[in-house]
Length: 427
Image (cartoon, rainbow, N blue to C red):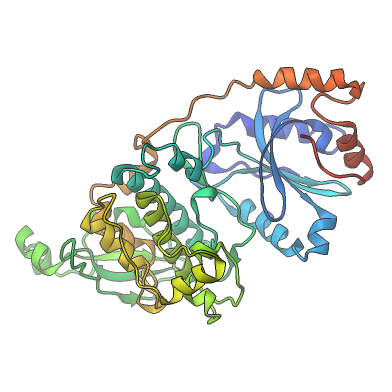
């Protein structure tokens, strides 16, 4: 089954290739793809680099074994991921081109990111960490992705460098949504001051809700440049110095799913929020905690609460105060933001009420043009992939006696695709 063309990928030739393939007499299945390489694997499936036969288009295909999902009680997670991927239409989130199932497998056909993930990219840096400028770039794109997810009522719950993929142009894409939580959300406008006190004492904006739901609202990226409609003529005539002293009141778009609640113990130990560990129930604030851990790791090359084992790590998250190493040096504004994000009480954590807007206004992101983040120059751009390197592997596979089996598919794989038996193993 193919999805609808996403607006941000309207000129993508992969849509046309998939639509042509799905318009043929036989339904789309594994035999329509050349499986070239296993890219990675997770808790509910493996991801492969694939080529759609008869085209020069390449995809990442996530393959999940039905029997394994059922026996391990993971079927709901797989279904949730597919549903979420079908909703997404954002430049920093995956595009689901199509999905289908065989007797044995569920398959999701998505965008292939040739740059690997941020964990691998961090390991390649000179001192195993990013510069503050590079960290700001990646964090800003992740922040916009999280903001969009929260607007849809999706709590991500699995942010870590391994799940942040790098596209061929150097921009990012979040991946893996099987741990995500879907909930209701009520967009509203809030009045707020956008002025901060300074790098060491961040002045929180005033938030008075104006219950405007489901309207057509100006994107939050533009609000700092807008005067509130409710400001009097006298206020609009204030001098710039008055505005800098007293704060420019603006209307902000807030779509934070603050009422989301889950008791599930999910996530990676080093990234788990204290409220998850304590079993208190959690909501969207866990994404801002993990965003703080993520930013800390980008800047320092390690997470702040890692212990000698999982039990020690969980204990540190709940009980140990946040500390910053002396090296590498990190700016005060970066530390201030991380402190706000890694506040153990979720009710006092930055962005818990006002969402990503509050983080965008933090001095750490000063100078970021949020409306043009997608046009910013990335810190690094991955080398282009020469897909011809896989031709030899396919030829060798045929030489091993696979006969008339379509190139790059083993006999066991084709049998599994047709009969539902056997394991999905190609390499």
